[in-house]
Image 1: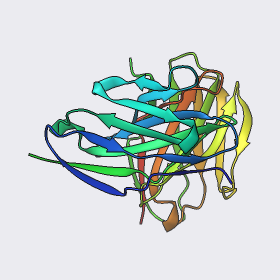
Image 2: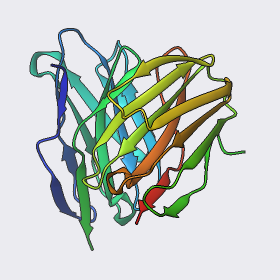
Image 3: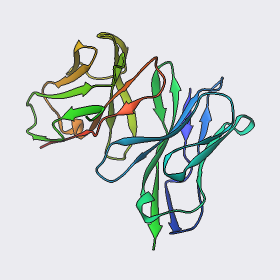
Length: 111
Length: 111
């Protein structure tokens, strides 16, 4: 069955440090891939997406993600984390019109 | 001029009651969705409608009945509420089954 795995349930980084959140998917073809962010008590905001083409995609708030077909991965990165980046991050794949989400990664930012 | 809006934002009710959640999108999209986020923050699709027609109906109790009066609105009616229905319900919309944009969520608490 198709699935999305975010191996890290919780990550803590210091403000200003770099960040990488991992995402792996299990799907026969290359699906549409997304990262969403959910701040406490808020809705889901789209950070970036990959449909095809350049495997390094840029998103909002200084985030980027790289699609690696050989590893079935779509990891999210940011070179320098800000305290306001503390939130829940969800990787998702689009399958026949519905989004399949990973379990989410909680990002905590230390001052 | 919120793109996807939901009402109410919070809903506290007694077990056995019937309640509705409303969703409206002003993006001109043709597809709308309902997702449920449980207490462990796991997100799962419930329904999707395309131009007022039900497209996706996941394994959801028939106490949940979506209704789409027009393609800009998708409401969710829940009969005989149970404790396990407590969750955050997100509405989303998309054009051509690609990028989905989410509303702020409705936090339902059943007592």
